[in-house]
Amino acid sequence: MVFGLSLLYLTLAVPIQFDGNWVTLIWVGEAALLFIVGRTRRATGYEALSAGLIILGAISLMHDWGNHPLSMMNFSTGTQPFANITFFTGLFVIGAYGAITYFHHHKKYPSPYTEGSLLRVFFDYSLPVLLLLVTYIVFFIEIRGLFSFATLPEHGAGGSFGNWTDEVESFRHLILYLYSLLFVAGIYSVNRKWFRIAIVDGGVFCGIVVLTGFLFLNGFPALNDLAAGYLKKDGAGFYFGAWNVILRYVIFAALLLLLLTSRAVIKLFGEEKLLQRFRFVLIHSSILGMLSAEYLLWTGISGDGDQYKPGLSILWGLYALFLIVYGIRKRQIVFRVGGIVLFVATLVKLFVYDLEGAGTVTKTISFISLGVLLLVVSYLYNRYKDVLFGKDEKESRF
Image (cartoon, rainbow, N blue to C red):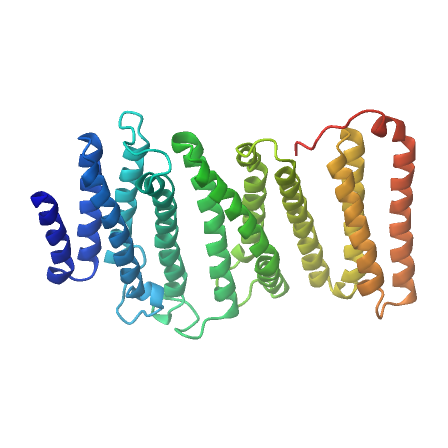
């Protein structure tokens, strides 16, 4: 009891005697030391104290971020990205939380708490989530500051503080998006190889869903604007040069790779058909979105941008035909249903949106093209109906 009171007063004395990052460093270091000693010596009281210090350390770190020049976009202090005390403090916190997580899941040091107890839930679930959030935010702030710092006149860029060009702003957002993709992929790989924590894999899948949605809402327009501006002007006046085009394909490849490898995450939830089908929608929606973005980019550059409405409908119809043909060949109903749904969406788009203000030639080409595709689908269904509906079909494994 006396020793516990000593630790308590020592902890309370830290913010009185020290300022800024020192408070975070001491609290988090104390938390790691108490947990490791408590777990290895089987002194559960130390572990309980460390849980409180972990929370205090996280609160103190958030206070440090609030005063960090890079997070506040204030460069008057001359703070260098990746070379400042707040970043090094964040790295120390990551290392300490990681060490606690490692010892908690080590087979040599089993947890003394029963399933469902408050401390067991904290170290099993809350701490890994906190570790991931801290790791993500620490590097996110520095990367954002790095690109913002590069636009200052004294560092050779053409922009000025508080007046960034649209190109730099868009490029910075997309780099942060790519960082998020790589972060999720890295967490997935590390967790599957060493930890195998189920909640982390669940968080990875949620992250994939969020990142895919962000690409549709903000990513595709920004990628097209950067690439089109660079290609139309032959690179003149663009700070990042050819990277405005290269970045789009790097992001496309990273997202597709992450989506394709997410099948192992779905397996953790058992044979959940709903999740499998949701993943199918994510993958093929992303592929179709990328193809549509490419079509819009190159038609805009070639000067045929006015024809994007019927052109997109034909592209969607061809992709729907591909899904149906693949579904017939592999006898997988989810592909065929997906293709039919896409055909319906394409026809609705054609009548409601495409034909508004379109000329006679455009209308004729659109109707004939989609009509031919529908005839092909009808022929294939009639040609292989005995094969398709004669036996139970396989579920999609894409």
